[in-house]
Image (cartoon, rainbow, N blue to C red):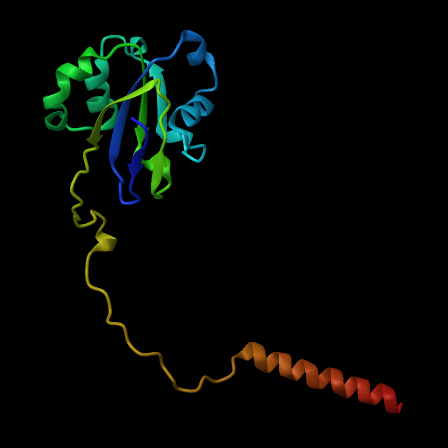
Length: 175
């Protein structure tokens, strides 16, 4: 695999790579190593995972994708045997790592794409809010009231204070 083009519209994909890495590689800074392996230093490391499958303690790669990343079982069913056969280090790239931009990755030869899967997106549904304060109807959007406003008492008090200060200043100037 020389390049991997990922469009900006790709929002919920999970790409799984088998990684031929040494134990020393896995001791390095994983964010830096993942950026180096994928050929893109601008990927968000919070959405790139690099680990040895032995760390999953019996869960297996298919189980991790399903339980840990929300990939539906139905999506994994066709590849389950292949996923469970993967051993050693893996790199998992979530679409969110791209920051919503189109990218063309140049994966290191030590990476082999195992598969691309889609995260489960539950349907959005709106239910009424349970609070009694949320019940009822909204008032219609009325045009603003254009009647002239009378000055408030604060403005009247301020005006009177200014007049008083002016009279005191005039009395001092004349006296």
